[in-house]
Image (cartoon, rainbow, N blue to C red; front, side, top):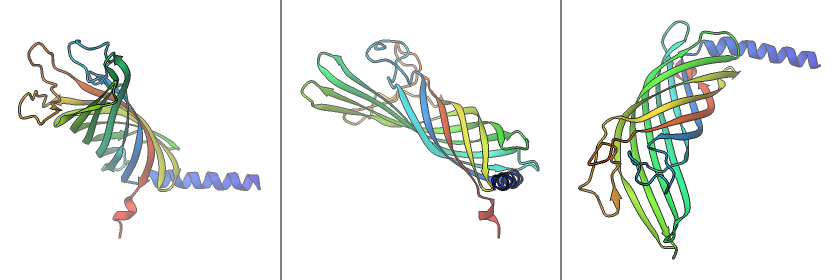
Length: 240
């Protein structure tokens, strides 16, 4: 019985390998941990007064989807289209005598268009590399709770920046139309479009202010994205 079960598993895996390699259209649903880089991270209040200024986030998460279409005969070279939500936070207790807690938050919706190369290997473990040009829609907030438990909330005016990401990953085959993916990317959120807004702000609203101004240097926002998820081969949805 045990031998029969092993043979059935091997047969299913063999079928999966052939079927997955024949798929041209894929959808990855992913999520994971995001580590802020550049001026996006910072230690409060130790980094107050540094140049460039910090955004004081500490850790974050990501969740989203990646569509892929492979256009060569070996299904190795593909176009990717992604939408990923990134959230970065930091909560600091008792930073000074008048403050009980301060929370920093920066959110980014990243839409990417890029290319991917999958190594044309046979087996259950397929590496890939890719890069994307991205549009980033950035917002944020700062909430300050004083020693009397009164909360003073400030919101960041939404900003659009353009950047890129690049990384590596692995697809691990499981079933004919489903596999698992893991990977890591380095994301650069604001390579293009840096700006400083000091006017036309609402009450308790501040700007991203990542362009150099006055005595302050330009600020760079980036992150290392570590993710895992499920891949669906969706070719059958486009077949009659």
